[in-house]
Length: 134
Image (cartoon, rainbow, N blue to C red; front, side, top):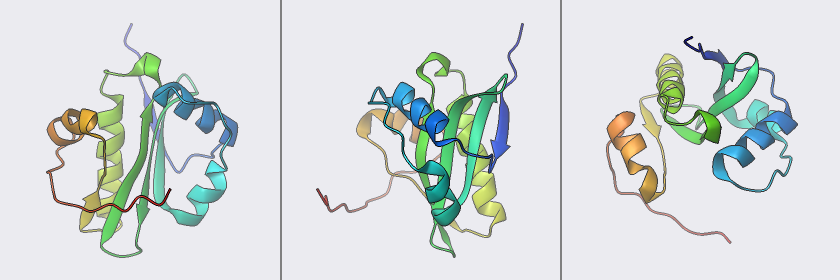
């Protein structure tokens, strides 16, 4: 039996559910974050991947209100990884950014994710700078 994953754009966010997904995806503590408020205020869009109504993947796109969009918080439940769900989320986020008139979609990632973002999702490497604030 083939499982069909449903991608839902700008779905109603439950802070507990999305925080729990991030904890499962990244192995961190299950601390509830104010996702819904942040997304409504700052995101161009967000997309959830759902399996039988359960949130199993997520990505958000922040933006500057103009030409630049920023891919953030890509997460897939550890039990559902390596099935193309993350790529599907990034593709949907790319399409939404393009439809909004953005010319660039930026992403920052840790070195171990280079294969995913560069090879699987089509990003190209660029030079960037970073100032740690903590």
